[in-house]
Image 1 (cartoon, rainbow, N blue to C red):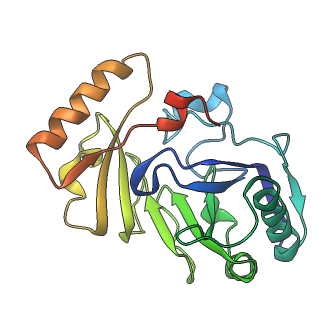
Image 2: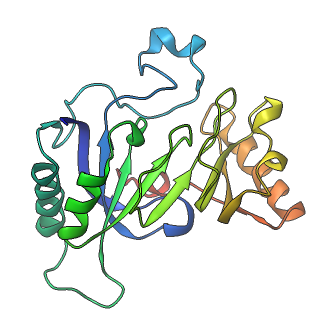
Length: 219
């Protein structure tokens, strides 16, 4: 298949259980819950996305004809930024994100990234089944969408969402190791941080996840 990539870049993971870990972010173009166009936002299933995933015009974006070609790009980004050599705890790490990465991420690409020495993570809305071989699965459920991926490493819920089906209580019995509330980044961000923090204090199975890349100015 041809892989359509919005951008790929080196940074620190800013959210969730892997916060602070160096990674190549591989952002795929396209999503099944929103077109990415502002004119469609009000009618979209997911209306609060803060990411540009349209087209291939981002850093290192483009169309890649083979899994090996795309894995080589990811490797080149890592090697251009990280000190050479494998250090304890410093395994190569790639985060496949979007948009919705599971519309494109497939076993050949996972295998090609593994062959280059990468631990492969995905950040998904959970509406598409995950292929075998992934090392880390982070699911971020959205209201008004069918959650088909009900197990993984972490569940990261943007909070608050008004819809009943997006309340934390709906997800607490699912098969995840970590449960995070991430304050919604909107004009009420400060209030949302306090609401999420208070919920975590009352419900300690949940942990607070802040978008530290935004706090530090990292991409």
